[in-house]
Length: 392
Figure (cartoon, rainbow, N blue to C red):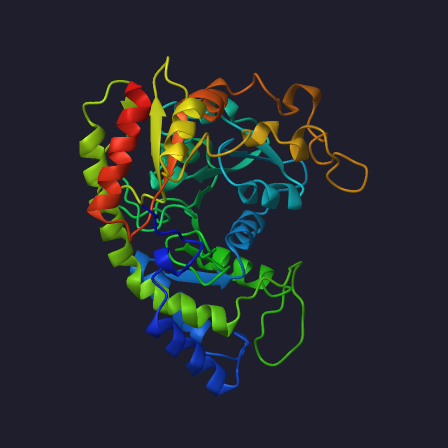
């Protein structure tokens, strides 16, 4: 049996609405969001969906995170605490702003940042906490840690569209800034694109300036008020994203329904743990945590032989072990800013420093591709394959 995939139309909700949206933009002759209407409408709709005052669109999820990091304005050498299990796009903006990523360890069951580990990592140069809602599970407890430390919380919601905290607040609305991705593999897509949300007008303005070369576009004066890049979203991407945004509730409903089915099917299987509270989870992927003596590589290999799209560990190595951080130069031949802090604050990198994250990647974490187009038959086949792989 083949499984719908986000890499082609079998697993995407792209259809006549997106075709009409692209046609509308092309017929207008205006493809730039500077003078167009689609991206501004997308921003309003995104803000309304999340009940916040401001949304700023951009060219990618990584750009959204970069805008957020730039908006909280770390000084060179300041530290931003983040997760060792995420896409490199979570870390690159920190380095790009000459700040130092400090990796706290994660909860061994969810892969999300452990609030106690984040608290232990806070130091005199901590400027922000950048939490990741891994696979769509809300990373709880970070707002309280950020408030205690007096620093902003940035939420990386790239994998967590419409995920909800235990108190029912949407992911992205608990922190100071929420960041979202519209990349090909996400719940909704325009190929590449990003959005940030916030209730802070000053931060929203900083992010909008940073995405447009520091150019406020007000009063017809060409004045560049601050350092910025060109992270503008196009009208074509904005129009597709608007059509996709309207389909988002249905996408989440379908993913949650089938995730509940698989969770129930695996509930009595020894050594297999699945996320709790499926109706708040966004189910970008379906993560499974295995207890020894089961290992993720052996189970993933068995699932692959059965035709199930699954893989061990999600990453080949946690981010604190990535060559780009452990050994490669960052700017020119220099490892700046990683070498900026005092000797007692140089971030510990490499294997053996974040045991929970390392164990998840190498031994216990299994991820199964998930999709709103999965049928009950797909889910039942996955459950059967997992049972066979685990019980031998």
